Image 1 (cartoon, rainbow, N blue to C red):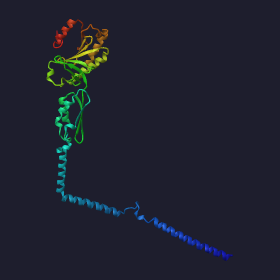
Image 2: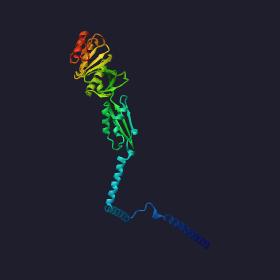
Image 3: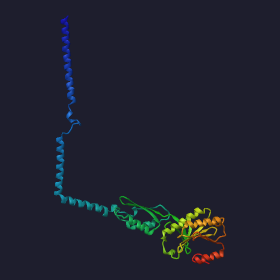
Image 4: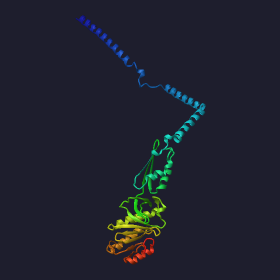
Length: 335
């Protein structure tokens, strides 16, 4: 029995040996396949010597270029000048970047600025290079013909378009002259503009100025100082705020005296001095009207003079009142 067991054990060991040998050979083959491309993986590190070698090649290339620049410097200089001349020709001489009349656009944001006059005033920009136009010169040309313009926006639209957007000072009053049927809008910067259809919201401001003759100016005329217009606008707005129930018929401005007369629909005239404190004058007028039980709404008073601070002068006798007015303002209040 022992012999048989030994024979079986020996046989088992022999079979196991050959099985293990075959397994080891297969594992060896698989390992050889797995590490076959080891030298081509992305994680392979570059040796320090190769880095130094690449830097050396790069520095040699830089030195070679520098030497070529020294050798061919006159050739490079000539090529540079040729490029500059070509660019200058394209920018200055070439018609591709020149502004033609059909490529100029002018738009307005108001109804009183004349676009045709604007086109006429900047004709000198035609056929200029879009790179060489002077925006300041364009603005000066536009303002020289239409002083009512308050804002100008100039945009270059490449290659050869020019767009201009203009806006005007706001209309504040309208006026008309006795010797003509023309009506003019008055802007906030004292510019007179001829207008056929006057907005009914605007008040009439009559101008008493012997130096202003209608045939002396064109449709856009700067008349007097801007600060005086601001005072008139301020007086108008403050009067409307303080006396909400009073209907204004018109305003009369006397340039020589620098006074504003507010004519109410009750034929009452309120005389205000623009060089004096306007707030105090209207405050005294309010105080006077309240103490007189709203006398401004009646038809009994001809004028109220508040030009002297803390004093109010009123006149109720029509004949005497108009005599006073015609004596002080003979050019307007005639006898």
